[in-house]
Image (tube, rainbow, N blue to C red):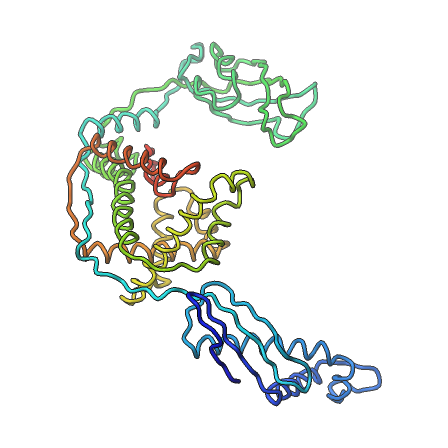
Amino acid sequence: MKTVVQSKKGLKTILSIVVEKKTIQKKMDERLLELQKEVALKGFRAGKVPPSVIKSQFGKSIYGEVIDKILRETSSKAIEEKKIKVAGQPKIELKTFGEGKDLNYELQIDTLPQIKLKSFENYQAAEYKIKIEDQIIETKLKEISVNNKSFEDKKDNEEAKRGDQVTFDYSATVDGNKFEGSEGKGVKLELGKDLFLKGFDDQLIGVKKGDLKKLDATLPANHPKKELANKKTIFECKILNIKKSIQNKIDDEFAKKMGAKDINDLRKMIEKQISNQYLQALNSITKKEILDQIEKNHDFELPQNLIDQEVSIMTKNLKDEEKKKHKLNNEKLAKSRIKLGLLLNEYGEKNNLKVSDAEVKSEIQKQIQSMPGQEKMVLDYYQKNPHASQSLKGSIYEEKIISLIKSKIKLTTKTINTKQAEKIISDFNKLSQDQVKPKKSQSSEKSKVKSEKISKK
């Protein structure tokens, strides 16, 4: 095999590769001997068909198969020998080929740019520590108490009121006929929440234990059975029990029910959870501040094929008119993502950063622990989706790189309260939305602070 750099312009390299006919013939002979063990032809014993007979019948397809394999092997070898960093799939253009001839072809390669990393020592960014006010912790504690009510039985002759928990069996019909899911046993509803069907709760107000109650309701428009969507339904309900809510005493016993050691531990858990919600958003702002400086201070050509691929991925769910309308903006965002990806990867390689399988498993374990009751679902997701594990590995790798960069720059730590945090996040979101339209940037999406409940362990 002979490899010559035919041309090199910018990020495009063309290699001219020649594979001698004797090499091709050797590969053909090897393949014919392999097929001799497999091919069965009338008039010949199994495994005894002469290679010449196999070639006479299947020669063209065998030659094509051998050439295809040679192209894969020699193109990979040529790229490795010339130490070329490939961007995307190279193109092959055959020049001369055929039995008894040398194989001559061109390998057209889009290459990655040579990146010279600049020192990060002059970069500056702010990271945040957040102080959660006592009032916010107490408000959240009361919210948890309300969302985890306790109930006690009402007297048999007491009527159900809004806020009570009613337990009942039901049998339902549509146009006098039963249907799949038309019966339920031991259903519990807290009246007033409307978690069953719209208007259903109101019709149970005033019932007593032991009552038989007929209710009218309408099945939802998104019912799994299309023929039942929006159908008027009659429910016959037998009231099994009625309980009234009792106010939780916020003490050590309540805290233990919530999975804490005592009430002080529960307060600390709430503070940590709220703090983490804010810090997730604030950390993404710090990261964006660093990335903006890295992008601004480096300039190099980008492979057009990678830009086209990124734009295609970003706009795959958009209509053609939307793609055309925001073409320049989408290309700008695609270039930014590719440029930063190449820069971070270069920095990771220069510092020999790697992510082990153990680190990926540890991160999956953290996700499992943060979703009590859904452990199997999380585990199944990663087991059935190898791409998800690979994506997670990429995220861990990126965070390792960012952490290392943080250790090299001038990082100012600011302690702020929740109002200051919300203003910083709000201003960042507005700026992100102005910069990236019509879609919000990923950083903007990550920067939303959501209030979540602490679940029972």
